[in-house]
Amino acid sequence: MNNIKRLWHIQMLELEEQKKNKILKANNILNDLLSKKVEIEIKQQEFKRLKEKYKLIKKEIDKINNEVMEEKVQISKLDNKLYNCFAYNQREIEAVQRRLHSLKKRVNDFENKELFLMEQQETVKNKLTGLSRLLKKKIGDFQQLREQYYLQQDKTKRELKELQKNKQKLYTEVDPEIMKLYNNMRRRFKNPVARAENGICGGCHMTLTTVTQKKLAAAGEQVKCDNCGRLIFME
Image 1 (cartoon, one colour):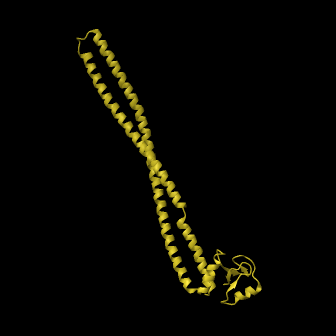
Image 2 (image 1 turned 120 degrees about the horizontal axis):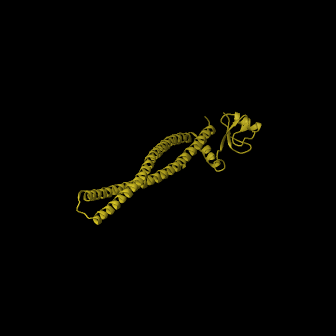
Image 3 (image 1 turned 90 degrees about the vertical axis):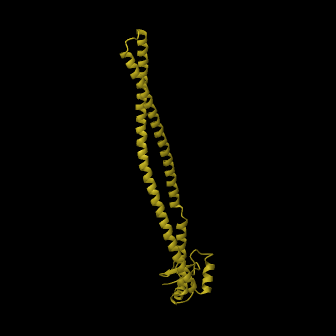
């Protein structure tokens, strides 16, 4: 392999190295991970608020149950007083009946409120169940994407290390003066070395002169494109 072909391989390795570095710095997956993380945090906050709401509703239901039980105890006592004691006069009987009516109405109101709260509780419970499933899926997707990201990064770093190793090996095999020329030409060209095929420069895609093509046919000769000035070689 002559110097120009080695430079071509170095150039290919450098282009591949740029691609690998671009992959390492790419924010596509990171942005996706960040977006998913934000979504999860929002849903977790929503889940937390619903859970607190569920607890408050349950607390309110328990409070109503206690109040209903107390009221029913009072109703039971008044019932006994009303029907088991014959010493009351009409006015006292009417007073007890009014009190009973008031207590029963309160119990009825409490029970209606309890039913309303139980419906709310059931609705919140269903939302919590659905949100829990959604969160589980979102967290699973996030963890899978994060694992994919780390694997891709590790793979790219290994490949990049191998590229750099091969590139350094080629550096030592290229004539220092040719290497210096290549580095100087890189200030002008992104790809200073081009392969010529069918009499056409692979860099500028222009047809080479007959003289240049003959020079290319002579193995080991350093040849530049007549049009763009790139170093060219022929397989």
